[in-house]
Image 1 (cartoon, helix red, strand yellow):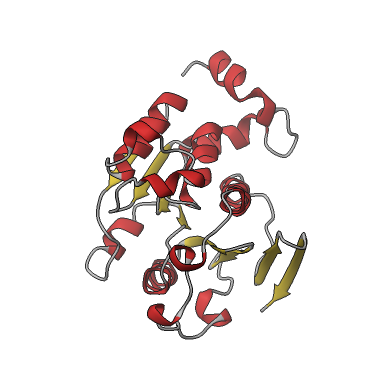
Image 2: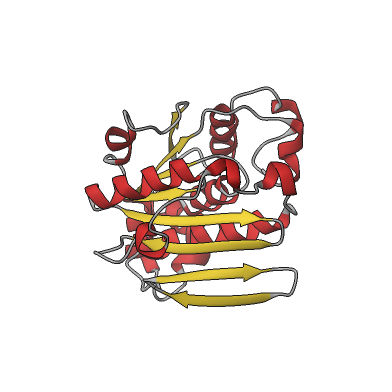
Length: 236
């Protein structure tokens, strides 16, 4: 893309003093992996693609279902039954064809986690189960990769930056995962669609700040309670 076209497209973020052209170049050279193209992954994918992330990889093995559409805003009615990765690819291509999209239609597991995660600068985890979250966390620690973490349920959400430049990680906050079958989830208790939009946007923003080398809060978990509109930061 020519310099004048880059400026024309991304001028509103280039105008930010702390971003500028150098920050935009960093964004366009970055490689980000988003794990999950669901409630959290959707706004992350949307805003990273809009910002011009150079390479955007999305890993998900699920299919678009009708009940996803209240919150998974990159998918549409006519893509119900399609793989979420293919649907995400269509969305990114239509929004910003300059972004190199890499689709990974596999479940992240112990056999492929290192190979997949090692290829990217920033890892954004929008998965919906503890086994994947802890596997991704542990792999990022081993490979020294920055991890953006988020979770949602009902009217509550959490966001944190883990393992950035040696900062603490998920196990420093919660040493052991609970049993997934013992934990409530969105399938059983539901989630109001705008909540993952809020949390996912926060995750995307943290990703862009890291890419452009702006300061982020480390060793801190942000708790969001949208029912009572409270934001609480917990140091760990």
